[in-house]
Structures are given as C-alpha cells and as structure tokens.
Length: 549
Image 1 (cartoon, helix red, strand yellow):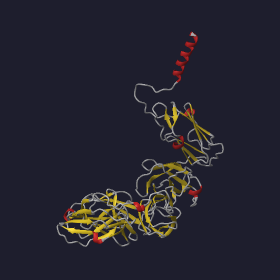
Image 2 (image 1 turned 30 degrees about the vertical axis):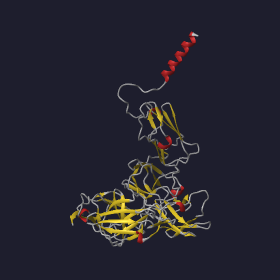
Image 3 (image 1 turned 180 degrees about the vertical axis):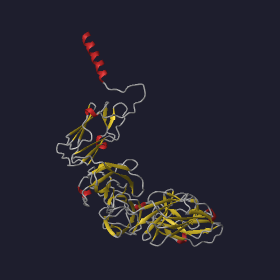
Image 4 (image 1 turned 60 degrees about the vertical axis):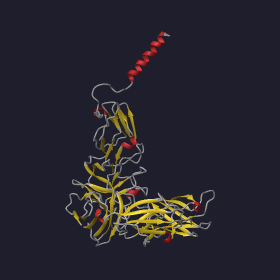
C-alpha cells in the first residue's frame, strides 16, 4: 500500500511538470512567434509543387480560427487542412488539388498563429512559393468603401482575374485575392505583370464568386494594368437594386395588415378591389394598410413604378379582432400648446387613418376674436393618421384651433367623440434664418438631387434639373445644417446603386457641413463638389457666408 501511494504521488508530480503553463513574474512577453527556418519548409522556393508545408516556430503556439484567418492566393479549388503538431504548423493541400503552373502562391496566415502563453499573433506571416522559375514581386493596393455612406468596409474580398470575360466573376474563383481591413485598405502582393479584371465582393457564401443577387459588389470600369506604376484602386461597394418582391404579410386586425418587402419600395401604389375605404403608410421596407368593407372577393393589387408586384386577398379571417371596433380619438393631450414657423402647417394626430372631416366642426380663431378663420385642411401626404391645418400665420398673434366632436371621421366610420384644442404661437421671423444655396455642378449635363439635413435627418429635398442651380430654404430655426447631393445620372429622382451587367457605377453622393445658421441672417452657400461621400466643411470655405438680412 505504501509503495502504491509513493508511485501515485510521483505520477502526479511528473504530470504537473509536463503541463505547459505561463511563466509568472518578470516583463510580459510581447514578442510574436518566430519561424525556425532550419526546421521549416523552404521559403520563396521556385519550381516547387509541395503536398505539405511545415512551419516550425521558436516557441509553443496554438491555432486561432484557421478558416477565417488563413488566406491563399490564388484561391484553391479544395479546402486545405491546417493542423498543429508541437511547435510546427502543417499546411496540407487536398489530395485532389492541382496547383497552377508558373504561378506564385502566397499563404497569408493572418492572426491564425499565436503563442501559447500571451496570445501574441504572428501577424503578417506569409509563406510564398512559385510553381515556376520566378517569384512574382508586383503588388496592387487600394481602398474599399460603402458607395452610399463613403465609410470604409472591412472583410471585403478584393479579387483580380486574368480571365477578362465579363462573366468570370460569376463562374470562376479569382486569380489573386486579398481581404480589406478595418480601414478599408487592402494589398495584394506577389502579383505578375499584366491586365486583370478587378472586383470587391462581400462574399456571404464564401464561394469566391458573385453568386447571390444581394451580395454587395464593387467593380472598376476599366481593366487594371499591373506594372511598375500600378495605380491605387478604389472600390465603391453596394448591393444592386434587386426586383421588388412581397416578402411577407401579417394580419393585425381584420382591416389592418402589415406588408413586408425585400427592399424599400419606389413609387408604391395600390388598387383595392371590392373595398369601401383604403389607406396606407410606408416605413422603410414595410407598409401598413387599413381597409374597410372587405368580403370574400376583396383583394389588393400592389404596384411599384406602375408595374404589378403582387396581388393579395383581403378576405376577413375568423377569430381575430376587427377594425370596425376601434375608437377614433386624438393622440396626446386634449389641450396642447405648440409653436409653429410662419410658413408651416400644423398637424393633429389621430388613432386611426382619417376618412373625412367636417369643416363646420373645426374652428380656428385669432387672439381673443371670436371670428372663425378660413383654415385649409388636408390629410398628411405620408401619415394618413395626421390631419394638417394651414394658415398665413401672423407672428405677433396667438391662435386657437378647436376640433369639436364629430369633426373628424376615422376610416372605420367612427367619429371623434372628444373636443381637441391647440393653442398656437408663431415664431418671429427675426428669430429665424435663411439658407440661399447655389450649386456649381461637377457635370452641367446631369440632374441633381439636393437634400437639407439636420442631425443627419432629412428635412426636405429638391430636384435640380439640368441647368437649375439655385435653391432657397427660408425661415429656418438657427442651428447646424448639412447638405447631401446626389448625382442623378438617370434623372429618376433616386440614388441608384451600381449594376455590374449594365456597367453602371453607383451614383456619386457629396456631403457638405454648413456654417452654423444664425437668427435673422442669410447663409449664402456656393458649392462646387469635388470628392464624393467626404464631408466638406464650409467653416473654412470662402464660398459660404452669413449675411444680415
């Protein structure tokens, strides 16, 4: 028994001695693993057709996310096997892999190899060999950005093809490959001289091909000539505009549905069949619809840009609530105080889309006078639950808007039951400013769309047809504003992404931060956009100035 106990303790001691643990005390090790070239496969070898590549390091290491970090250029047909044996990383080609002749291969390990104790990565480690007589030594570099925002994109495949056919990106893996970093930059080393087609692709299915219609892609209009003075490349990446489809529909109530599309619709319209009343509201890629009087034959034809997208049934469902039972009431307090701008209408929100209103039950008065004023009334063009009231407001006056019971009727026929009151004051004009904008167009033959933004939110937009260069935004609250300009190449009033088969580049977007607008001043802005998506400040721009009115 004593001998067994001594043997057991001895084995525990030896086992603990065999464990690899971090050393305690002293300075922290920040040195990445280094290759032991004497015990590794030859570096920069030519006329080399290896089945395995072995890289031995000067310390104990471990592998980190090999599938994500190890990048082979040109890409291999079959997935290689990367394993670790003691201090040696073994890169093994698939048995069916056939290496290209007279080609320089580079295996970039990224952050796949780290030391065991501190996790220091052997970043930048690339193993290069050639199946021919020479190691190609040219390089291609550049940046990848989002075509709409201009922000750098990481983890984007940058691909070069020596096959110059237009369809190559659909059918073949690239000849050379790199992946953009967090700053959007990329570099492809060991490239041979010649001409290549170049693409930047967010490869969602990891097949190194443009195989999905919604994969963001960027391409260059011309071939890339790689030589002693290869230009820096810039890719503007975006998803192409895919055909609009109805992705799903959800019945909230009988009379209320939520429609979901695969993208934001353009020029959406509806043709209700066998329906008494209909309203809708768009929000991004979804649309909420309200309808009344539907029966078993009722349906809805959905159109976008005058083309029929889908037709859905509006047939009532059992065991679900009904829009007819919903109350019509105001949203918010019954008695409100609001301030408006001299040229703006005011809005009153309701719990249901508005079917109609009774002018006799809507009264607008000025100051303490009892006389009823002629106020204009309309349903908001975007929100069918918002009723807008317009009047040539006088800034020194106070107004009261009163909506009496039965003054507004909801889509389900229910009448407003409460009295709603709003006290209205008008902001004096001397507390407001004007922006007077003049565009010096980059291309005078094109149409432009200019948007006025505050805190990155669009306030309004104006289409500037060819030859139109001036816009005035008047009576604005003081503050920070910016402009966004779309180079509307096809004059459709929208920003359009690129399309590879149509050789259509994404439309350029220009951004300008304006000098702060002051009260009772005109901010004159003359803008000649130069660099797309890069914010230009007018604080140092002599073409922008504040002038007293």
